Image 1 (tube, rainbow over the protein chains, first blue to last red):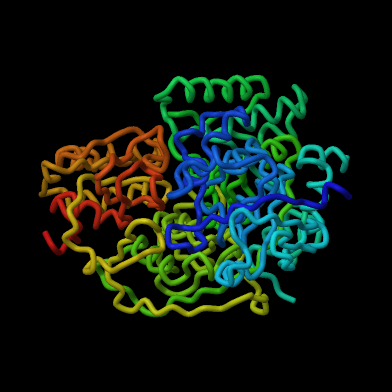
Image 2 (image 1 turned 90 degrees about the vertical axis):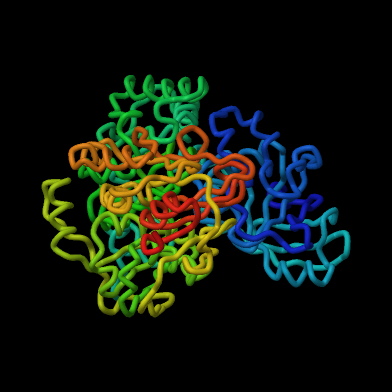
Length: 179
Length: 416
């Protein structure tokens, strides 16, 4: 399926020392001061608004970009807005070595592609993976490549339920196919 | 093959085989939403399902605890949107007077051992304290659960954590919990269920169990259980539910992904330093750091026992003039107990600010935010950068927070 193939420019969430930021929590992704907002379009402006070095991300990000974070991405609260703010920015996908359980579910249920990426630290250390590169991957097979450098990447493909929800569009649409 | 606790609970709620690693459909005994997430649940529900009925209104609740009562027009609107939806569908609302939703579910006898409960609160797994599989979920999940009464879930692997030895007499459940965070970090029990064993945890009452289980989220775990318990806990739980307390225990041949032993012999009081709840030092290492404010409350340390411990320290002492001490009972029931036992009076006399029940400073909307340059010591569960404002937050037990507020710097009761 065409929808399965994702391609875009990447943003690698590094700290000021050039290290991938781990344990990014939902208050750094979408601060609790904006939780009263229920309109997804309004959430875009607050994405990564409390993550040091990345508070201007909504201005820099373009539709179709891919965000890469460190392990345990999305720790903390259950707020859906921390996923919705990326959807509002038309981010193409989110990759990290691992996600917090609730964050992962929230993304899956919204039909937003979140996938595990392997060997991230060595790729960054080996300068094989940097902000601005264009990567392409298949959510179903995990086949992936850094097109800018012609280097293959390892991505964990979606699980069956994640893929079914993704194909349907979101949990609600998937749920209606079951009854 | 034997089953772990989480496998047993999920199996009771699923037609699928509940083996770790499998994705199953699981029936939910209770689904709830609060003032964060709740308005989005209503919005999703009405867009997707119109005015069609819920799966079961008697199993569906709203619990308002974050902005209670609403201190901004937006939250007033959001809460009212939930109340209107609740009225149309005949759902019970535990409103802004009641306090923290997860705690109210325990007190109401709704969170029972072996049951499954979801809500828009990432600390819903605090219900592991009573042997219930509680899980925080986002608004899409909860709207779906309102309509269907079910959810998909990957049965987590389990880790057995055995605590050996006896901590020092100066510690309580929070010190033990912070120590676990330090040792387990966000890796050892990530995406897993943890079962805690050993005399130290067996002896914990409900308040202590709540403290420990509430911070499984900060360790990236799914839920924590303390399978062994004493008569006191059983009695307290029976008072809430009117039923005998009989939580699930794991089979002897249950399969664990990992098994850890931690020695807590002589453990001294612990303090989490910014910017992470798992960045933990002993009190001795941080003693003397000047503080501007203190906070006692939250779903981690908002029970009567927590305030009683603080009151022991504050009974004959005053909060230092330069320090704000904020007191937020978890629930109205706790508030009532504090009132009747004279604890509120003690705290008031000491100079503390006592406010109505709720979540406190874990989010903007209630009490406990910090300004730039401010240093706070809190019994809460998170001190991520910027979460409670621009200040720095240290996490500690009620005793250490109370003592620090007297001293004006991080201190334990023995330092006063």
